[in-house]
Length: 139
Image (cartoon, rainbow, N blue to C red; front, side):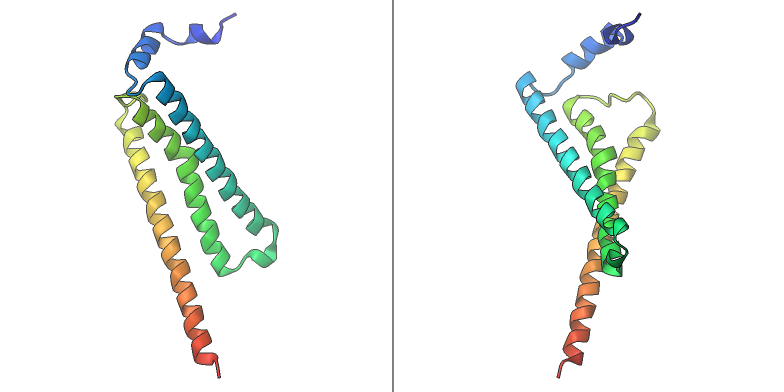
């Protein structure tokens, strides 16, 4: 029976440990904080999506903008943040020589930021239009 350590090439493991860009203490602190941010961000955004999905009365245009923002943030938390953490902690790209993965990470980050920006802009525009209509309809 194989154990987990026999599945990893020892030379690769030694190179990875030597290639870290931070000390052991900073590594543990940085990874812990990053994992907390990933878990809290993913959980909070999932709860927002769940709240709107479970209650039909919550499915307004304004709340759908917020769900769009939450989905974009979950993409950032679950896919790009772990890969960015690996890239920050090492001096090289640890996921092989495939350029597509590296470009995919940058593309996903850009898409997530773009969607977040457009969603916040749409929410602000919606709020502005509501305030304009309230101003014109008041006696």
